[in-house]
Length: 326
Image (cartoon, rainbow, N blue to C red):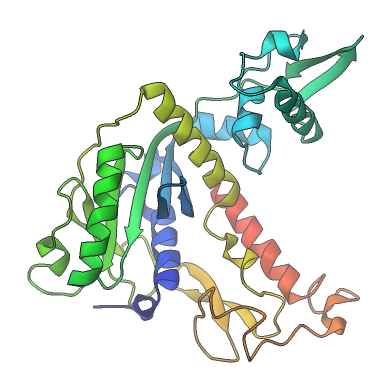
């Protein structure tokens, strides 16, 4: 059994992200967990389709004190080490492995965002934390989305998953693929690393918490880097996930087109093109699209029909949903 999303990895990716938001961990007690979901995150060497960050619930709530936007590595250096009492930033922060002028720039950026306090004492800039930065990240889960996992796709994916297993930056890696209804799912017969878990999905009735099941359980991965390095890289990825989520697709699509809509598919609110009568991909939804028509200026004025126009309303709706699930 497949789903219309199976003809597009982008659409399938949105389905998997929404399912993970609703039902992670698979087969576990979702009421006792806290997690955030993001898409298209990774390192210079590897980018994952879907990332699930398992969180300490109290730590996740405490992370909100530092705003909705992600903290990059330079900002993390500042907020994680900012003192409880006023101190010169060069006394308070650990010696960086890059010039102090970049630390000073990060201190100013942190102050502008209100995530540290600063004051000038003579020629020195002193800093003080607004709150202790929490230990909120527990585990990092990577999911590769292959709706149609045929032999050639499995061969390409096997190399990527083997890299994930060898490096061990994620705590677990999974493959999500559309359920076929066969006695033995084809994904189980492919030459994928045994350490990778397999999720089979059925979104034919729309996306909900029952849309995926475990066909093969993963094993925990052994990291090749030090625990300090791994924790630091995982935190940086978790911060990107916190700030970006998975609904940021509108940043590379054209919600300002008069044909761009959001339409329900079960518990997923996904993009829909009224001109082509389909769930468009990011590649299809661009200014080069032959059906693209900008919103009439009247839509964006006088608060009709939506303050700022439908495109602005769609962005605001997606932002509110991201906030709610963060």
